[in-house]
Amino acid sequence: MADRQGLIVAAHGRHYLAQAEGQLWQCVTRGKKSDVATGDVVRFQPTSADQGVIEEILPRTTLLYRSDQFKSKLLAANVTQLLIVVATEPGFSDDLVSRALVASEAAGIRARIVLNKIDLEAQRDAARERVARFADIGYPVHEVSARRDPDGTLAVLQPLLNGQSTILIGQSGMGKSSLVQLLVPDVEIAVREISQRLDSGKHTTTFTRLYTVDEQTRVIDSPGFQEFGLYHLSEGMLERAFPEFAPHLGGCRFYNCHHVAEPGCALLAAVASEAIDASRHQLYLQLRHESLQKPGYR
Ligand SMILES: Nc1nc2c(ncn2[C@@H]2O[C@H](COP(=O)(O)OP(=O)(O)O)[C@@H](O)[C@H]2O)c(=O)[nH]1
Ligand SMILES: [Mg+2]
Ligand SMILES: [Zn+2]
Image 1: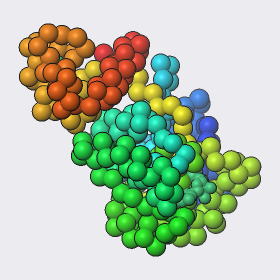
Image 2: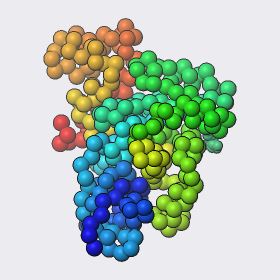
Image 3: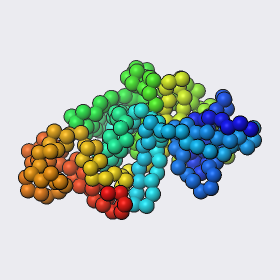
Image 4: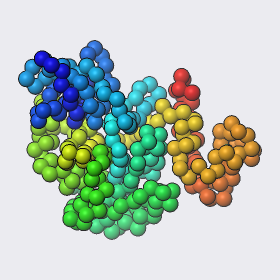
């Protein structure tokens, strides 16, 4: 059978679901390769009416991933936009938000923050204050309530998602799946179909899924995560992934300044004068430390 071109809509271990010619194909890779990501466009060789073997990943425009000391975890390919979903309750981690922002900068993907559950008032002001710090750096923040105000939520998000390929990421319980349910018509049918084909009907939510809203618009739901390692980013990539550092880079006494404890460091001076948030600089130091753990990347 002739090769087909398909869009990867879900990845689970080394099993992939490709959408092609109006149907889903269960695909595997050759050998032990598992470098295919949700959102990839692949060329595959059909082996039956609905199964195939992936032969080639077509060139990607973007690739979003995280990594620990030993391996990379691909989050999604070809996305144009990252939506970081946080909520008033349960509490969210600033550290994880910042790490996701750093990942998006390094991958060249625009990022937005969505503060969900603004109907819950107890922690609302505190949550607003925390996301405002990211707005100050320049990241757009959008307030919604997927549950209490679905129409208002759609009015805010639909124009932002139109024509984009957007991945929703965030800790579990923030409301990612609730938002996807609003944004994707007939999502239950798509979920059931994907789960059954990929996971033999076990209905786990531990994998990333892509939904097609229209020809130009895609939405990707991802499982919640507790950590976001970025061991793959070099020191040079890291300092450029904090947009608020930019005005100060180049102002250090030493051209090869690491912004750790060097005399005459413009970044440390900016932290001291509170022009740069100390916790963001702390994260830079932590990420730098992580990247130094990974030999061969520097
Ligand atoms: N009060 C309130 N609860 C919400 C809202 N959005 C989602 N939830 C609830 O928060 C819980 C987690 O939502 P879910 O979409 O599964 O989060 P996910 O883990 O990020 O996918 C569910 O019980 C939702 O009903 C909201 O706007 N307001
Ligand atoms: Mg979910
Ligand atoms: Zn410096």
